[in-house]
Image (cartoon, rainbow, N blue to C red):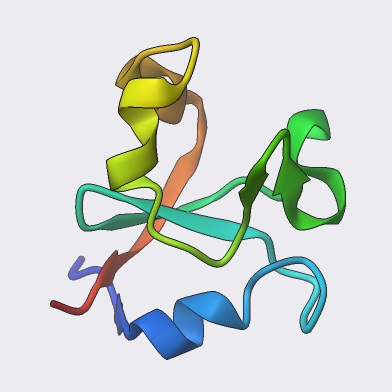
Length: 78
């Protein structure tokens, strides 16, 4: 099944504030992080949901393997 493609504007609405969905993007894929207790209200430390966090990962205390526990729900439009 082909994943749906979402624009950055559509991703931005899934920030846990404007809509109940809490999504983030990483390396072109969009993940649903809404079930994570670490993303309650759309905020995880200094990061906000509804954004592409690819550039921010090098500063994180974890690796990209953290995304393996989240469902990929779409692709970010380039």
